[in-house]
Each structure stands twice: as structure tokens, then as C-alpha cells.
Amino acid sequence: MKLAGKIALVTGGSRGIGRAVVHALAKEGAKVAFTYNSNEEAANGLVKELELDQREAVAFKADAANGERAVEVVNAVVEKWGKIDILVNNAGIIRDNLLVRMGEDEWMDVINTNLNSIFHYCKAAVTHMMSARYGRVVNISSVAGRYGNPGQTNYAATKGGIDGFSRCLAYEMGKRNITVNSIAPGFIATDMTEAIRNAAGKEIKKQIAVRRLGEPEDIANAALFLASDEASYITGQILTVDGGLTLGSGM
Ligand code: NAP
Image 1: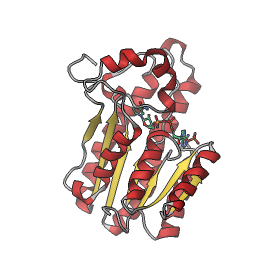
Image 2: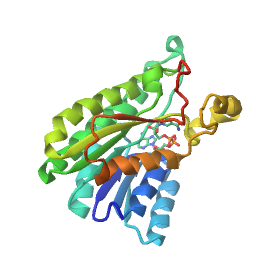
Image 3: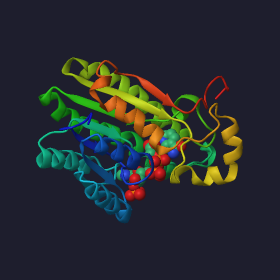
Image 4: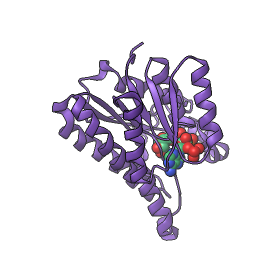
């Protein structure tokens, strides 16, 4: 049990990558709180699943774009379990469109959900971590932040922003025994990528060195490592987990 006694919070933990992260942390002994936006059934189902497995978990309905709610959620976790050791900022959305057609709502929704949430959750959580002189922050970005994709100016701006944010916060927090890293996933089989998988799944696989799409567990394994004590000397890093998608491909 690598995370026995640890308390974790995962944003957007009810489905996809976040759900796999919740499972991975809980399996290693952490008590895990997670947020979701609208799908209550998925969130409650996950809590039940974990409880059946003798794990402690709690779900909070909290739109990641809402800064006040972020503070409430972090404080509720600390009130319930006494501290917060691990924060995984995973909640994210896409609203793809070419820039010339992109509405300001599509721009702002993505900025607020994917990037502003990182500011709010990190600020609220590191305040507690600083007092405890311990913390592990893992922010989920994307290879799109580095390499770009047509139709994703909004999304890529947030993901590149997350990587820069992680590096800066790592500098600020290092001396307090708090590490901050990003994981940049490639193409992972989740609801978010269902449409493009259906349209171009075979073509995409050919561009991936290991010739398969990523599974949510591939990202969860990396998050578990960065959240563990084994990664105490790793901070300010962007860990690409893409099966070789971006290897020398011009992407
Ligand atoms: P997903 O399958 O669409 O799942 C998204 C999760 O986030 C759900 O639990 C959802 O909860 C929650 N969520 C969405 N909007 C939210 C909001 N405003 N507030 C709180 N929670 C919210 O997505 P995913 O593919 O697992 O992606 C997870 C993260 O990985 C995202 O940051 C994404 O950008 C990043 N990523 C994904 C890929 C990929 O290929 N899938 C690649 C690179 C990076 P509800 O069901 O309640 O809405």
C-alpha cells in the first residue's frame, strides 16, 4: 500500500482518466475525494464501487470553473479527513472550432474549466499542504499544449498554460516538500475522444509507436507514481504519456 494514510482529491474523477486515477490511488490505500460536474449517476456509482472494495471515497458536485466552490471542496476534504496530501487536477473539456469560427463562449468555457480551475484548486490545496510540509500536485495537461492541433486554439492554450503553471509552482513549493508535475497524455480512449476514434481510430493507431490507443489506466499509473513518495525528487516536470505518438512525427 504505497499511499496508506494519504488523502487525495481528484477533479473530474467520475469518468475517463479521472476515474482511473481515483481507482489507482484508492487501491494503494489513499482516501479519495473527487469532483464531477453533472453526471451524478456515474459519480455515485464510483463511490459505491469503491466502498464495496472497502475503500473510503466521497464525491462532490463542483463545476471546476467555479473558484468559490473549489475552496469549499478543498476545505471540506480537510474538515472530513484532517489534511490533503495529493491533488490531481484532471477536469477538462474540449470545445473545438477553428479560431475564425470560435465564439467567445467556446474560448471562455475552456479557459475557465481547464486552466482557471488549476489556479483555484492549487491555491486552495497548497495552503494546507504548506502547513503540513507535504504535498503532491499532479496536473493533467495534453500533448496538444506542446504540439497543437487545428481547431484547438482554446484547448491547447489551456494545456500549454498548465505546463508553465506547474513549472512555476514547483519552484515556489520545492522547499516545503511539495512537488508539482504535469502529465501530458496523448490519445486516450475515453468519452472525450469517442467521436474522433469512431471517425479515424485506425489512422490514429498507425501514428502511435506502440500501435494502440492509450487506456485511462496508462495515465493513472503515471499519476500514481508522481503522487507517491518514490517520486519525491521529481518536480516541475512534464511527463508525456502517449505511446510514442509525438516521437519524431512532426507532431
Ligand atoms: P472525459 O472522459 O470527458 O471525462 C471528464 C471528467 O471530467 C468527467 O468525470 C466529468 O464529469 C468531469 N468534468 C467535465 N467538466 C467538468 C467541470 N466543469 N467540472 C468538474 N468536472 C468536470 O475526459 P477524459 O478524456 O477522461 O479527460 C480527462 C483529462 O485528461 C482532461 O483534462 C483532458 O483534457 C485530458 N486529456 C485527455 C486526453 C484524451 O485523449 N482523452 C488527452 C490528453 C489530455 P461529468 O461526467 O459530471 O461531466
